[in-house]
View 1 (tube, rainbow, N blue to C red):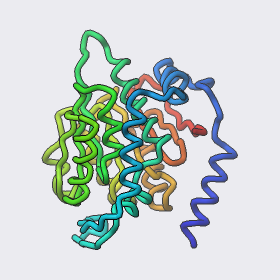
View 2 (cartoon, rainbow, N blue to C red):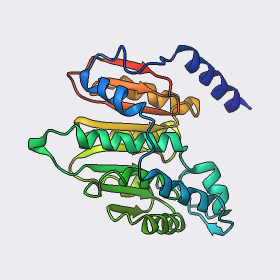
View 3 (tube, rainbow, N blue to C red):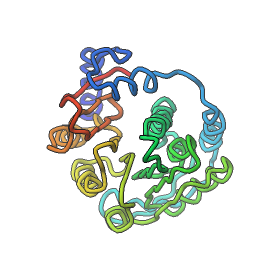
Length: 269
């Protein structure tokens, strides 16, 4: 009951205070272009329909699978139906599509003299739908995704195989044990959607931080999910290496370029 009231209050406050802007008031030209031309882009891109068909397939999958969940700090193996996992765990289409457009934007905004495939890291694969959105914009980008449950990975891999996405690498195991020893030298985009609690969110951020450059972007999921997640988000916003942040309520975007004006934009999306 407390969490329900907490989320309702913070959602109402966000709706009342967030900007409904097409980029007006965003001081950095780079961030203005992101908000004006990509974030609010409403085009239905080529990849959306095939991925959403896979979402529908998962939502209708009544198979029981055995999960391994490290979220509480110990391995558990409950039986759950795939459709129930899909209902509660998959990222909403509008935010998954936002991540797709963010990958497109980061790819297109690269310096042509230093153009390289993006290194994208996702913490929390689940059934692989969001991973597909991250991988679909450019086949040369490399998506490294982390998941604790082997059975979820198998379901996700069937999604990627159907979509013919061959630029995804998955690492199975407790993220706390696998993350620090398997990251690429540089990370262009990091998406945190794993254990939704304060300690884990801050631990993931601190582990990823040395691999993030001034042009990297960090995305945190469910930043208003609980008091702990909100505390973690606000702590990330205050970190000395962070310059600009964007609070979209469900997602938080973090930018590190020291040339940006230090500011937290609260935006309607």
